[in-house]
Structure formats: structure tokens, C-alpha cells
Amino acid sequence: MMGNEYTTAEPSPAEVAGMHGPLVIEFGDKYCVICSAARPAIEKAMNTRPDVKLLKIADGRGRPLGRSFGVKLWPTLVFLQDGQEVTRLVRPMDDQPIAMALDSLAPLLRTT
Image 1 (cartoon, rainbow, N blue to C red):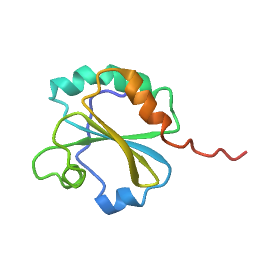
Image 2 (image 1 turned 90 degrees about the vertical axis):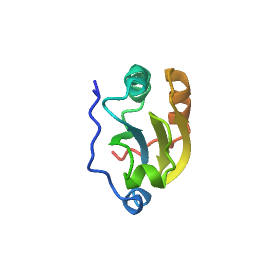
Image 3 (image 1 turned 90 degrees about the horizontal axis):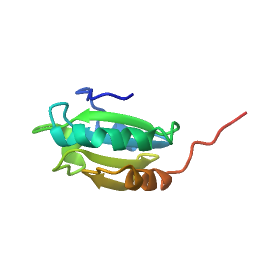
């Protein structure tokens, strides 16, 4: 279970742009009731893609990462591949749109 903990230690926009592989950034706040309502759908969809990293970023006034992505409503999920935005969802309440967005991300290549 992922819980409602959002970190205030956010990467810079340049650091995000340099990240490799599939990544979802969830912008929200632990006191946001809509974020809490969306949590089960987000968790259900994310559990289908354990190869995708999830960053839960505490957003708000003066938070540079959220502003760089133009976040206005919570939760906002930004789906990135190799640091580039592929798609985003704002206030998703059902796991299906989240799962479809996750499917737009390439899986990590496994080396054995």
C-alpha cells in the first residue's frame, strides 16, 4: 500500500528531464480529500506496473516542480518516459484511465 505520504523533497525540473525509464509524478497533498478519494484507483493501476516508479510530490504555492508542469488541480498524475511527458491525468477517480496511461509508457527492458 502506497499511503498518503507526499514528499517535499522534490527533484528539480532539470533532474526530472534527465530521469530514465517510465515514471509517474503524482502532485497532491496529504490533506487533499480528492487525493484521498483517488488513492485506491491510483494504487490499483500502479500495482499492475511495478516497473514504473511513482513520485508523490507535495504541491502548493511556491513549489517549483508543480509550477514547471502547470499543475492547478490535485491530484495530477504526469506520466513520463525518459524525462519527457507522455500524458497526464487530472483528478482520476477510476483505475482504467490510469492503466491506459501507464500502457502508453514503455516497459523497462529486462536484462538476464
